[in-house]
Image (tube, rainbow, N blue to C red; front, side, top):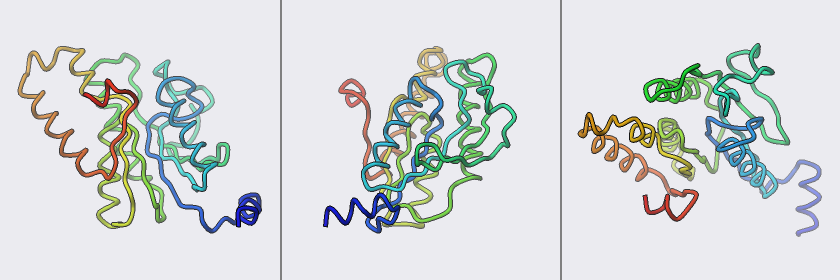
Length: 202
């Protein structure tokens, strides 16, 4: 059976393959941070009996500027990268980054990703945070597709940017409001994972 499975893999006819969608604002050719991790994770699953698609933004990190090779691309595009079907939307990228502009950047990606959400039936959807805003896309999908497992993998919290800016000190009620929203959203997922023991505690 194993030999037959390997043969089917090479011929692209493995009927046992499940379909996975990864929703992440950062992806290759970004070679640092979340983009690198998400790319390697997606390609790992591609090699382990999953047909993987990715819904992502245009590469911009760490320069906070759309990469030169993508500047003149259409606002929505599809490309195949190392056997992974990548759906891209051109999101707003601020020239000068602050808390408000960073939130607008993440919201714009989520809005555009919603309009370009891949069609088809997925066995698993993995959402990478940031951004938690896009987690709503997986929750909405599951309402119509109950058998789909949805997973939230947290690499960072958007609320950290607010903490760094001191906005919670000025508006303390926001901290509780955002915390309740994060908790409610996470509880909608079948699996929540993160990157370290420190983040698990958080």
